Amino acid sequence: MSVSLLWSILLPPLLFFVLTIWNLARNYREACKVGLPIIVVPISPENPIWMILARHFLPILQYIPFGNGYFTRFCHIGWEFDEKARAHLELGDAFMFATPGKNWIYLCNADTAHDIIRRERQGDFARPGELMAFLDVFGPNISTVNGQNWQRQRKVSAASFNEQSNVLVWNESFRQGKQMLQYWLSAGSKGVSTLGYDTRTLTLDVLVHAAFGKSFDFRGSHEKAKSQGPLSYRDALAIVLHDALLMLALGQGLVRRLAFIPRLGRLSEAADQFKSYMTDMFNESSQAEHGQKARGNLISSLVRASTDEKLITPEEVIGNVFVFSFAGHDTTAHSFAFTFMLLAGHLEVQDWISEEISYVVNGEQDLGNRYELFPRLVRTLAVLLETLRLYNPLLSIVKGTETQAARLTIGEQDVLVPAGTRVIVNINALHSLPRYWGEDGLEWKPSRWIQTKPGNGPVYDREHIVMPEHGAYIPWGEGMRTCPGKKFSQVEHVAVMASIFCEHYVVPVRQKGEDEVAARTRARNTVKDTGMRLLLQMFHPEKTPLEWKKRHKD
Image (cartoon, rainbow, N blue to C red; front, top):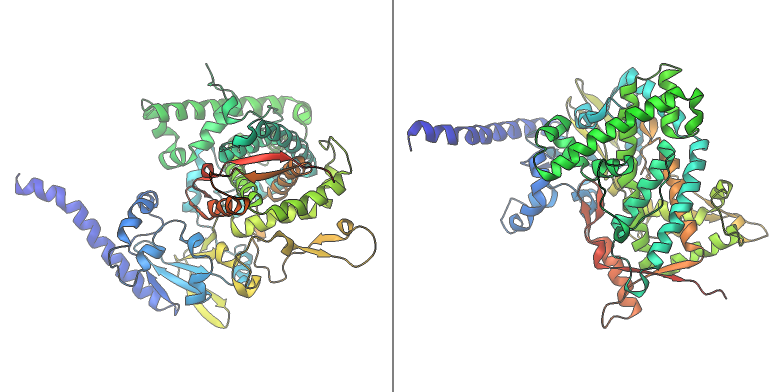
């Protein structure tokens, strides 16, 4: 091998290594000026290759002495879930990552978090646009724009998520929940091991109905038939959402060029079909006078904003529908999966919500048109609030300084955040810090959200949700970028729970030699085996099949 050839092979990685060391040293010097505890992370958290490979390498690297062990502890996606509040209890309300890319400040202080979110409107701490640019794959949208463009799209999006759409969500969620329950009951004593798949199917069906006015009956994993010919809208969207990471990482153009690879070919076909269906639906809705053909659904509201009010473009309509689908599908599906597995491990909580549902339902069989019952199901909503406190699909809120430094008060400390610094609100730590949640903050305890008003009459009529005064609960974000689908997800969750737990309960299928206590412990351990992929999710819910049973009336 010639010397020139050898240099051509060795020079690029050598230059990359030298540049990494140089940037890391420079950023470390910058971090020292801030005055916060510093953790040196030799690989940027934004490095896409390391994000994918870290989980595979860390089990090996943990046996190699990397300094004080911070590398294997913090240098991987999802460390926030593993740590909970432990790192902040050791290092304080804020500490800093010095990396070869940007420096990152992690925060676990409710007052500071609210200050950061409030000051986004002033431009002090903005959402980093480059981190969201990948969501532009189908068009500009509320997640990828800032400034006046964001305000314009936010106004349209907020108007789309209204009480009329919530009625659609309630009705379809109750119908889908009933059908999913019947499918699960048909499994009998062998139980259901396809929890993740089935909850994704349910949330997709609800989304398609609420967004586009299309209805599909629930079909479980064993009822699925391979589609022949062109994909239906629902199937196309399901494939795009399932392989969203590939689509977002590679872009639609490259996916199309690599269509000779079977999986990418299927994804390319689904993406083309999705965009074609979206265009057809846009044209259909725009031709219907004031959206009468699909009244109340999300796309009809967006189309009216485009065609009648000229507030957004057709491309922005399609881009926002994709982002609503992307942001609201898997997040809700994983929340359902967590909830069902947690309830399987906590029979007392099932009894607690069943009592409320039975009282509110009062013997009615069909609640599909009873959206007015939603505010009364406070225990049922508390189950969702508590699940999202400990198992929020997103672990943090990412803000940052751009071209200018900004001052920030953290407790009694005043720091100057340099320009170009990521500022991360550590949701997982904020939701579990003993200062805010007490010594039982790591326990899944839905009753912590309920207070009972004094007085006479049934206790169910006097209970109400109480949000914590400390403000350390932000699973849907806060401020100007609060998730517009917040109530959408709450209505969907409560309706599905009401459809299932009024007359039924769930238990983990016992393994040979297990008693009931051991089986429930295994369900709780299945929930603990959780980490980040694209979102926070259980790694192996199939290890604990769930059996659904009819309640015996006293």
